[in-house]
Image (cartoon, rainbow, N blue to C red; front, top):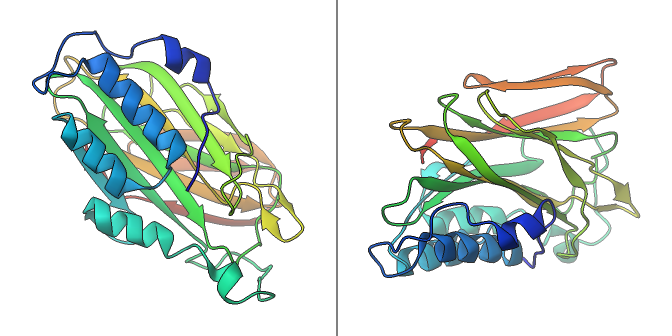
Length: 258
């Protein structure tokens, strides 16, 4: 999938999430973080390629999907790709309906430079190309952490149509500072039987120095017709409140150690 950065891209280009110290592989942590961010923007949900990049610089990588639980980068990539292409394979069979349980898939991934206390954590989603039952006003995406600890160095988010055109439909709703994680709004606009937020991701660089072992998970709640009035996240999960009922589907990942 093609990609482009959206939220706080300028900050990501100029602010190093970690110190410029040199890791065990000879790459500075700042260069490591910049490269993994750039690859994610250009190839969202390509966990095979991202893992190869991370490991080539001596870093560690882990990934989990809602379909598989913790898995290999190759399997995670295959799972996400399995939600693509139905439009081309069976044209004219798009299905505007209430959310089926397999309407989309979500993931959590974590990359760390060797010797760094900064983790790059992303949550991704991908809707089936033959399902266009999404609708306004917004979906909710959240990263959650096992401890209210650490400092966020940067935030990222991006959305794309099924054909990989960048659409800029996600925005930071809550920074998560002092809590268990940040929350984003995703404006899942549909036009001409095309979901303009078909796939995308949210991410942070978080410095967990002094926090001890930490885990993270990702939640995405698809919403059609419900007016969101509140959203909060704790280690137990994502909670979304509505002023009126609508069709919703929340999918979550198994946590991974970051």
